[in-house]
Length: 465
Image 1: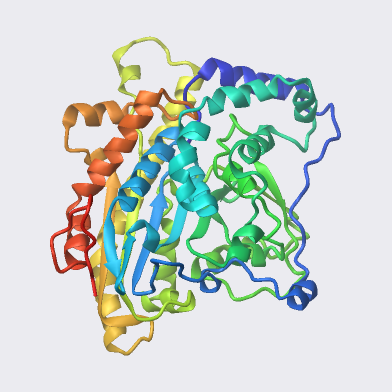
Image 2: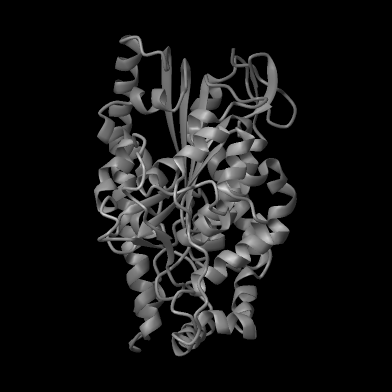
């Protein structure tokens, strides 16, 4: 979730938007229908993992998946810290010096984590030069509130078809993504694949911005701006309005979907009954951005099938790094007999719900690891072309709750969920992420299994072949 602080400003924003509703006829553009004939004629590459090639330093043998949780700028900064530590971890693959960051094949995120995920997918290592000043250490939230006071934007907000979620998308596009679409990512044909998660408002199920999901809607993904997807993923109910997609299901021949997408496709297939899809904060359905992994494996019945479907061959090491910036509970309410305000109640209830869902997801993930390892080895013994006979799975938990220093851990967990933080808190989060990843026993196991010699991040390139 995002925007849990600066309550007076956001409540005022909510009141202003409600008061103006219904005065304008402004309509934001909707996603476009899929034109399969035109797509076939132009040979347009679809944004699928199997269409994205490994670049310099990236190999199929080492598959790295990053998942970034929600949590506003707190989550964005924590995810950024993990990226910086991966960049600071040199390895040698196929005789070539590279880093673990170069090996990232998929980056998934929800809410605040989706900002970092999308920026990394769009700009690669440019993130280390521009992301802090343009987002992490800027007053993004204050700028967005100022945007609502602009007379033109106030007029837009008076439309029943335009909401505060659309203003967020506009600001994300102007300050961070500069018009980049999923089609632009597809044209590059390079990894990592970006997965941004939102929540279907009506059904409460996860909705991923992927080609497979948009195939179900018979809609073009290539024209969708990254800013729109991130805004959908960050659209906290009541504070930010949902963003809307048009459902064209039935107007095309849908391609086979992944098990996760296929499992929920039925709620979209009757477009006459449900012509629109309203999307809100992705953290409401999956605040850890890992359910797509869990569900795809569970629904496919084995580990090898999703790996084969995405075009990988001879995978030696499958690495999942789960980056969790969950906020601690707000115990301050229990230290007073004052009746909590409506906003405090909403914040506490939503935070408690997210924390509970995250605990459940973490428990499922932890309980699945041994079973997944066994399935990988069984598939490798059965001769799967996707897997090396010596394939190994690494599930690395980089969680704020795992910080080794109790006092600092308490401070980090108390950092609010907002889209603005003091610069020193951003620095603490980045440093904490790097420390937590380095101190992970599973991360250390991965590094020990990669090289033949001890790793020295600052100077020595180790070789894993």
